[in-house]
Amino acid sequence: MAKLTPEERAVYEWQIWVPGFGEAGQEKLKGASALVSRCGGLGGPLAQSLAAAGVGRLVIAHDGDLKPSDLNRQILQTADWVGKPRIDSIVRRLRELNPRVEVEGVAENVSEENSERLVGKADIVFDCAPLFAERFAMNRECIRQGKPLVEAAMFSLEGQVTTIIPGKTPCLACLYPETPPEWKREFPVIGAVSALAAQIAAMEGIKLLAGIGKPLAGELLYYDTASMTFQKIPIARRPDCPVCGKSA
Amino acid sequence: MKVTFKYFAQVRQATGADSEQLVLDDGADMAAALSAAADRHGEAFKKLVLDEFGVVRPSMLVLVNGVPAPRGGQRRLADGDEVTLLSAVSGG
Image 1 (cartoon, chains in turn red, blue):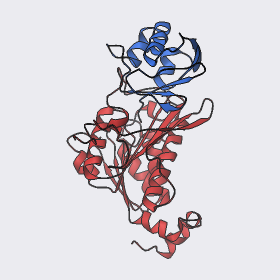
Image 2: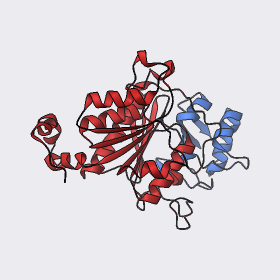
Image 3: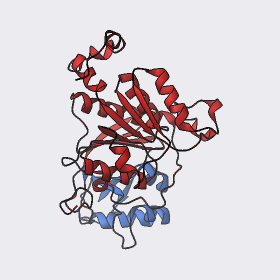
């Protein structure tokens, strides 16, 4: 167990006060590692919350340069950084927020080629990617390595979050076995909607790592900020799932 | 019988509506209900929700009164049921 220093006790005091979490929960976070892929409108606020909470080691995978159209939601970026690598800004901002946390920036998006290496770096994975190919690669590797995967997504004024625990819950391929027709890399969303999904996903990870609460296992949390409706939908494993089913 | 349809994510975009009520034949199943919705909303809806055989796409979640429905379309509907159509979305 990673013991806390007096300074860390002071920094994390408010969350150590949370019943059931305590110093033991904080020590579990300190000793944990997380992969966040990618780190834009969803992964950015998520990584920020994990860093602030004191998850000991963050691996951030995100390729590409900052575009003006990223700035409505990618809160780890700054207006003066347009045209420069997103990952540099992400790493810098996270280290500024919490220098006690180790942050490794990887200027890559998850793919079939690198998923084994990237997933292998962390205890838990957060899927914040826009492309289904990346998400399916992450899902497959998490199932193979037996690592929990928190799935978060959004569209327009709506969001969805679920937590995949290999061998126990449906995986992403059980839930959505195929890419939706004509899915586009860019889609409508307000930044606060993605940040909301991010915070729910961050809490899923913090709960799993600290061993508190009940995760969204076998449930899809769906919300619609147009009406502020939140709903949990039961989801089931598919026996014929090519990733986590009996024949996989 | 009257069945309420609730649309989310891309389905809402394709229909231009959050929800609506459709009048269906008594005892209609999900396949008939979705076919009626597709007739009403045209190609964008049809392409998103149904495959070339008129079967619900695997990228769709279909709920009846909040409970996931079997994918085959054989689920019988009753007067007053609420059908929810939710499409897969992503991060970014």
